[in-house]
Image (cartoon, rainbow over all chains, first blue to last red; front, side):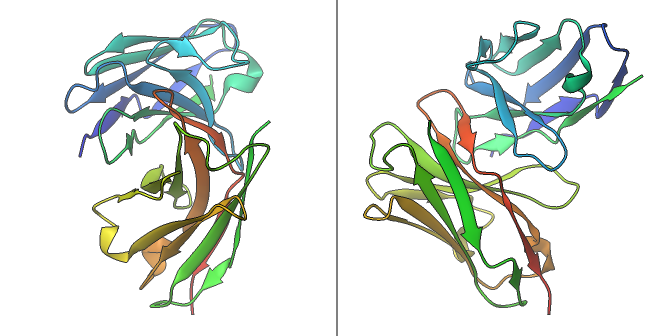
Length: 107
Length: 119
């Protein structure tokens, strides 16, 4: 099984600032990497797939980069609605696996 | 717009079998190119992939749960189901169903249903 490791576990950022979240895979997943946002009491929402392609309706302030084993999610200017938990997930191999999540909180 | 909706028992006794159904609306579960998955999230914890069923009926389960999991599809009702046997308190979680497309991750998701294992 591919282990996905996210860092940091918690990130404190002020509104309007940039947030950078990291995800590392224990072996190459090529570009088969997705990012999700989850708010309390809600299902995860797909943000990014293919490591860098925004899903339908996702604002341009969200961007993804990376390939192989190292990936980054960047939120360019944080809005109040962006404070949530973010998960990365690989879909290159079975079983599918998720990172443990990064909690993005207001500083 | 494709929508998924989980249903089933919210309380299951230890050692019994958890049963959930995911109803698909706004599209056909028989459409090619998609797999239909179950994913769970224990309270306050991260996401764990349980398994999938393809429109053809082929399945793949997480090895950590394989001995206890069965996923099936009912094309006439446009739904798929999860059975998890011999449950313990560690199986208490919000259970989600979701569709996986070809190379784009899980979208959409159901709203999730909480299953509590307790006597």
